[in-house]
Image 1: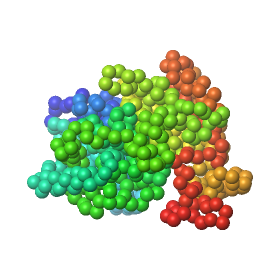
Image 2: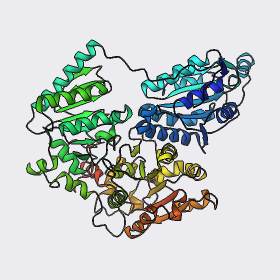
Image 3: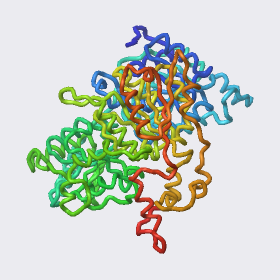
Image 4: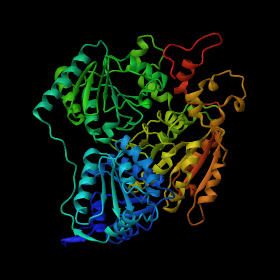
Amino acid sequence: MTTTTTTTCTVAEYLAIRLEQLGITHLFGVPGNHLGPFLSTLHAKTKVRWVGTPTEGGAGQAADGYARVKVADAEIALGEQGIGAVAVTYSVGAFNLLNAIGGGFAEYVPLIAINAAPTYEQWLNQRAIGLLTSHMSQRPESNLDVYRQVTVDAQAISNPGLAPTQIDSAITACLSHRRPVYLEVMEDVWEARCAAPRGRLTRQQRPVTAQNAKMLDRAVTACVDLIRSQEKPPILWAGEEIDRFRLSDEFEKLVRETRIPFCTTVGAKSVVSEYTPGYSGVYNGKASNPDVAEVFNNAGCRIGLGTWATSKNLGGVRSIGDDWAVAAHEGVHVGASYFPDVQLAEFIPALRRRLVLDFGAGAFEADHFALARKDGLDVPASTAAFLDAQIGGVYPESVTYDSFFRHVNAFLESQTNEPPGERGNPFTVVSDAAFALIGSMNLRMAERASYVAQNSWLSIGYSVGAATGVALGRQHAGKRPLVFVGDGSFQETCQEMSTQVRHGLRPVVFVLDNEGFYGIEQMLVHPCFYKEGTSTPPSDGADFYNELHPWRYENLADVFGSAKHPMHGFAVRTHDQLEALLKQIGEPTDPINQGPIVVRVQFERRDYPEALKYKIAENCPPPGGAPSEGSAA
């Protein structure tokens, strides 16, 4: 770890040292002359490596993916803070980066956005005589003002004497709020001297007051009373904050000591191993696997822990009802009652202790699938039967969304080993938005924090750039990203695979190609296109604006790869082809695994994941009928 024994250093050295102290190993970005002095110092003075990407947006997504896996990984206990960083050049670069930082802000991902600006002298010239230097606008605070909307702290650094305070303040805010911050540094400030760093920066925890403790006790009591009032056992719904706030251990203790079965949101997939006893699938509102939705709603009550009310998490469900409790956003709802300023980190262990004290250890052990079956619901006979049905089975000749992900599930299980007390797998799943997200949510992840997705911001193409950060963040552990991305999404960000080739990373990118078509947009706007038995030819029945130009995605391996930096491309349409390819991917010594792999998976245009059938049922009545009550817009 780089340190300085002098009393002063340059501003570039100061920021570089702080990044290294945070445990950051890679800085992503697109260079420019304003940024050059900092990058030279970073390379000379620290072990932080620069990773140049084709686009600023891809750099931000890489930093986002890097931060997500670093937040969750075990080595954080040894001092790493779990944070990502990205650096770009003023205006033209910064505005391209904005989307990725907006996603980090919405989804609580700690990122440091560094924007290298024109010199202080150039700004004085602009103010005095209106002279515009490259990338300037007539509004000197334009970049700063924009980034204030998507960060918890934004600083413009023009005075080297103030730089240490501004840098430390922003980074501390990033650590404390677990959200992005912004540092705009003028070019001539980089090599100016300032006070050297002192000590390390850490997260500042909000103290628990006596009033907080009383509110916590009231919230726990209300939750226990809700559970006590029900005839059936409860079910837990683990959410994003468990991952973001590093509460996986506490959640797992709650599950193991009370034996309450649990589901997760899409964004909290693999917050604990999905082989943990009690795991019952992903609940995603109406867009869940239908069996999961049935058993989840049939439980005595539902207890959400760190769950966010997003359209993807609730999937068409507009309210959560009186028989719910949800602890998130620094408060707890129990039915119609609300208990403010209750921290999730305090609530989970307090609830566990109360439940064990009042009911005894393991008192809530139950199989909600068996209970739902007993109540007359048409679901698998047990939780084990449901989970087994998501893996393998009889495949049709050609791949469908659901059969494809069942096949991938079988592959992941075949790659899972079982060292004492845990399960290991060489892959981290990175899912994009749309059909990829709905399909991949039923993959069963053996390891904690082995599934990454942007499930709220939903920027299409996120997964391709994020895979760069995930691969580098877990390179030491030999983990490979397994990426699922729609064809329209991939066309936004495919060039980010060139970074993966250049750095010898080995993601496997499955491009879900439904004949060149924005499938999810068609489903959201006109779902009747997918209704079984529709006689209109696909080319005539689809909305014109959802058409994509068809690509031969597998041939991008020839564009990005070379003899020195190999990349391989494949196209599969049948399960036999998929099986043969997965066998090669699963064999580490096979030559195709020397670099990235891109796979075009060819689906029929009208195919879609089963979890979205509710959209068709609600919006597409039989002849002479009408949409069901509560039809989604």
